Image 1: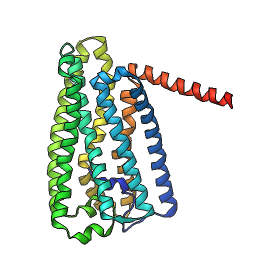
Image 2 (image 1 turned 180 degrees about the vertical axis):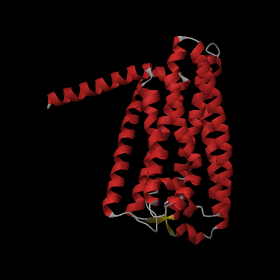
Image 3 (image 1 turned 60 degrees about the horizontal axis):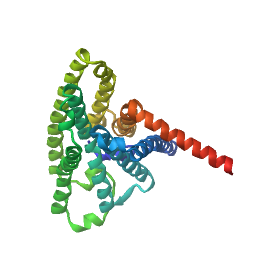
Length: 312
């Protein structure tokens, strides 16, 4: 994972033409507005109905949606800044990148936790209420943020210890590598991502194969979970490309040096945008309970707008 993917379409040696730059920015802004608009509807639905406050699955889903909205907004802001301002103050860039890194790393960890919750619900339905309590769910969300901070904050500490004070007042092209340039950070990042990759994939494979096995032999409700499980697995696969992104970027730079900005734009859409567009479909629109309340919210909103229109 690398927040430079938030502004990957600008490469110093091969900057985009005006038409191409406008096209890419329009595509990114339209996609981000669409995703955030849908997610905002899901958040409103969650907020207005008490039933979701007592279900660990929906609490984790709510956290995922809020986290994704923050992540999409930050990366799009950095994306646009990279074209309009090109270089910004190191301290401001660092603050943006740190928060974007936290939210980006949170996503696969949150999905892994949702996989475990789903596994417990299907394979141990009688024990689910006792294992997956609200208190433990909130503690789990805290653990997700703590894990991301343990991974990301050393970048800041190493930079503060090794860079002179004038560096933090200078202006740079806003990438993770330019704000946190120490070579130790790259080595630390690679080791951390390998560890995360192994742990998260182990959780995903173990829980989902167990769920799939149960879905083939158990109740109708378990069998209905198969389609959701497959979609969730695809989403996790996309999110996990975050951990392989540094290697992918290096390979793209070597293979397509003159088309590097286009390759990285595609990488940004696949790694940062696409996984965030799947969450509302899997856990919002396809979930029967959530879909029922979402329809009520949308119908009420349309009715209110219609009434207001007639009043005018």
